Each structure stands twice: as structure tokens, then as C-alpha cells.
Image 1: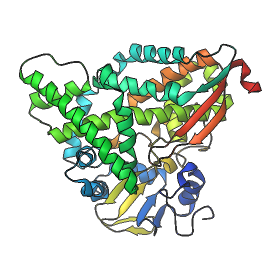
Image 2: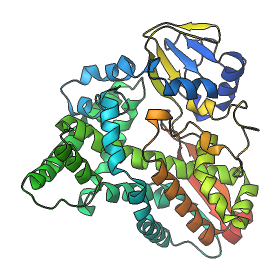
Image 3: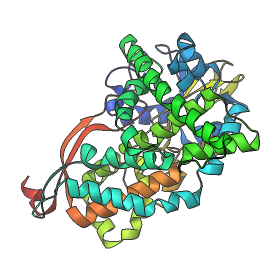
Length: 416
């Protein structure tokens, strides 16, 4: 394995995830079940293995591989956010919480958001003051970050005056979702989660009080979750509601921010695909899925072997930590022809495992696809063509997208 470190693949080492795809290729072809002595983990990289085992909750569970990582924070707000979130719990609790979300996060509700998403997108691009003659668009602060943030806040039912602190709190908490956060990151996460707890505890308590007094609740998903939980008797604890609110907020904007930015990156690298989009706007329907396949916003997930597993001649002992390299699976030639090519006409882009699979399939996938489609329809209408102007990788490994991405657009593109 020429491109791998002699001690094995380690996505948590500095710089490895800036461009993991050459290493992924080596893993898929030469070590599809790869044990890394540095991390003590097994890494799976082939599509079929990840798609199959990701659905099989009798073989791979979350177990202590995730929730155990937060034991040191027991008694803190950080533990209440992450220690019982959908990302770290197993059935029956995972299924119970997922059912409650699915009952409220409906397709009809997502489609009702179309006019509002269009309006927010238009307002943000108006504010960007795009030059008809061409210029440079700093995509992330102008659109990729605020669009999904404002959309998920409205979807959840958070009042405009309550939203601004969430960005700082979230950026403090997210780094500890990686398996090896630094001590400094842990301290920031404890601080940020404490602020989250104070706000959401008061908000959820207010909604429950209104419901029990027979008063109407403000619109939004948080109110719906409170109502479903209270009225159906399938009650959520305060910690579960608190954790769900955080999970939905973060999943609703952090991943979509990266998805929009990664889509722009892919289109800048594939100018022919831009031409195809302008000629066939219906290809926008495949943009989110092909982007997620090509540049996965969630590069991996951590699991635990529920019992001994034999795979490709390698024994994975029970209790071992197993990393599902979703970014690697999404470039597997066994599933996707010419996998390193970004292709909006690819017929099976939607089979990517970037949104999860089976019971772990992302509930907000439909909303994410909608936001990407609307954002790039508006961008193509206003900006014409794009070329990369400035790019800098993001600092995180699990949530994968650029920190900086600006694109030259319009008539001046070739001269910038």
C-alpha cells in the first residue's frame, strides 16, 4: 500500500483527511478490512461491505465505541447532548426516537418550505451584490452557511431573535464528535454545550407548559416533537428532547453547508458539468446525490462489533471498534462506473451511502436535496459560469468540507 503510512491508515492524524481519496483507493484494493495499530481500529472501505453491515444491527452496533467516549463528561451538558443522541445509541431507544422524528419530519412539511427556501436564497444573493459583469463570490459566508442555518431554524421553530448564538455554540461542540479530540477542544465543547442546555431546557419547558395548559404551540418541529411525545405516551425525557433538538439543528445545517460548498468545488473542477446543468436544468435533481457520492460530507462513522466477524479473510473480534469509511465506499468502482469522475448523469448516484442506510438513513435528506437544488438554480441564473478562485480545506475530519471556497463567476471568469 504505497500511499499509506507504514503503521497503517489513520484518518485522525493531521492532514490525512485533506485528500483521503488516494489512501481510500489503496485500502479498497489491497486491504478492505484494514487494522490500524495506531488507532486500534478496523477500517472498512468497500461499498458492499459498508452498505450491508451498516444495515445489519446484529453485527455492528454503536455500543461503547461512541457513547463510551463521552463517559468522562457524565453529569455535564455535553454528555446530555451527545451521550444519548441518535448518533450514539442503539435499539430500542434509537428506533423509538427515530420514529418520533419521522412522524413529524414529513415529505409534505419539507415541500411546504420550498417558497421560503427560495425567498431566503434570493435575499442572501441580493445581499451579496453580485456584479452582472462578473466577480468573485465568497460562497460559504454568502450562501452555503446562512442558507441551511436559517432554513433549519425556521423548520425547528426558533425565533429570529434567538438564533445568532447557535453558530458559536455549535462550532465549540462539533470537534468532539471525532474520536480523538484534544483537551482544548473538550473544554470548549463543555462550555458550548452548557449554553445549548440553558437555552433548550427553557424552550422545551415552555412548549410543554403551553401544551399542558391547552394553549397553542408556536409552529415548528420542536413543538411537534413535544406534542407527539406527550400525547402518544411515548414520552421523551428532558435529556432526549434536548439531545434531539441539538442533533436536528446541527445535522440540518453543518452537513448542508458542506454539501453546498462541495457541490461548488465539484462543478468548478468539472466545467463540462456546468454546461450540462445550463442545458438540462433537470440535472439539478441529481446534484446533491452525485456531490455526496463524489465528496462525502460525512467521511466515516464509528461502530462496534457485536460479536466476532469474518470478512475478506480477516477476523474482527467482538468489541472491536470498526470505522465505516463512507467516503471510500462512494468511490468504489464495483458500485460506480468511473468513480473518480463527477457525473450528473450517473444513473445510480442516489445509491451512495453518504446519507446512511436502513435505519440510519438521514431523516433530513429530502430537505438537504431541496436546498442544494434551489441554491444552484439561483446561482446559475445569476452568475453564469464558475471557476475556483480560492480554496482551503476545513479543519475537521468527520464533517468534511472546505473552510474557504470562493469562486470567480460570470463574464470576467477567464480574466480573474
